[in-house]
Image: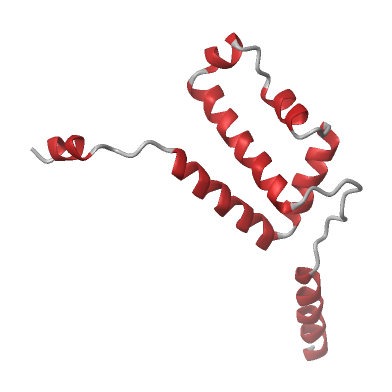
Length: 118
């Protein structure tokens, strides 16, 4: 029974150390993938909050990403899947994207905060 438990633990350790998704033929570097994820987040926010602006400018978010980064949908999805397969890299990417998004967010003005306390 102990041998089975040890074998299970060893297999679990080795299974968790390797990215289960094979590397795509066209591998985008982490910085490019971060930029893509950032742009996707901004476009999704724009689509949710002001879809008329995107429509007025004939911007389709998927086409915009593909043209800007000169990739196709398969390359995007393969790379997204590849980076998602490596939990540490994916978490690190999302932390950096979130930090960039927070830097874009408007800061509340001090006088507005003072009025809230009254």
